[in-house]
Length: 240
Length: 265
Image 1 (tube, rainbow over the protein chains, first blue to last red):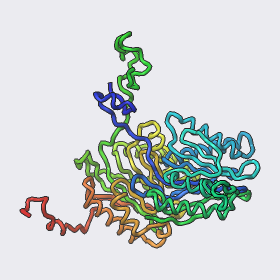
Image 2: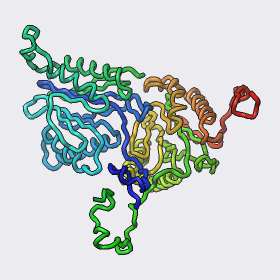
Image 3: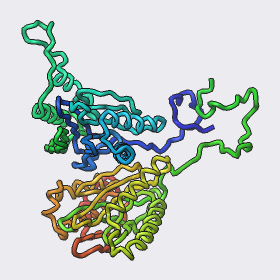
Image 4: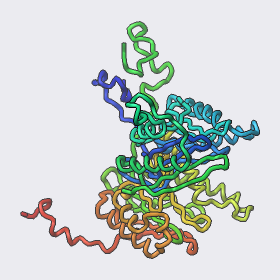
């Protein structure tokens, strides 16, 4: 009997393996969310790739939704767009049905269901949302492709996540940083960062990721949520 | 245990004998969809200029490496200011052409009364096509194409790409297939960013496209000399130039190439 390629491929050596249409691809790019005391940012580079080709130098992937919620789903771009579209639609129906603001907490739970609903044919994306919680504090939620999620102070996603995340651990949560005179016994106290400081960190993270990762570059778009609404900032990155 | 996933959850043959597929009229194999393209069209290339866009594609339908059909029109006009350029499987292209025809007919009924209020714009056509492409990939039954939609919308040039996976993107220059490797670098020399679009006029853009078509004919084995070129301009409207030929080729270098032919080096 013919079978598809599976984990047990080696045990089925006598059976010809069928090569199937691969419904996924990797479109590169990387994203980063950081929560401050009364603001949150969600940033992403604007390069869009497949394999070694640069498809576009400016294809934004961080989106602003209603109720000052930012969302980005990075990985397989078609799934990313489909997820964002579905979330926006879901939020629209929430407004029709309940006539009230969608909190970031509820948005996160809703996205978990959108992702887990396709558990057997997943959206191949790393999703991050950012906004303000009910107390007005900055909030960042991050998801795996099938909907496991967690609220965090900061999170990097996508191609260069593994390059940026340790930098964030060190600079935002001050991991492995000790008071100079304590001889490595007293940890440096963690405090909230200001918007300017955070934007500096984000820019440094992306310029460094651009140096070391081929699928990151061209441009950096940072969306910033405060109580006054959403603001956008754009910076050029190296295009090589 | 039999590790073949297709054997899971079935009565074991030792106890019940081989399963009789005729009972459920079930096939022994899973349902099969398009697994690869048959007749193919090669690259579509395109560029934005200060007053519109240009899209070009040759007229060849190749059957593997056989240059089978030499008169395939791969630029489809939709509505008053949209052109859809299709590469990849030709039969899937013809199905897409059918979908677009139906859409245009339905839209004409609406527009007849609404004073062209609801006339098809390139972004509408693109949204429809990208939805179809993503839905079909999600059924694991893809339309095996890479498509470029070009046109003018509210006085601005529009250009966007979608492929068999439903992946979409925009850029001031776009190309599918081989063109993305050979032609794009040439076109990007002219317009690298959205800002550069303003600096390029129709003549310059057209010259660059013709040059790119020539390079593709030189190096793409599945390309033909004959091609079509669509210009969608804010003032001049939509024009598809057919039966164009790659001109001014220089095969001067060929006489100096040694070692592949019959010459004795």
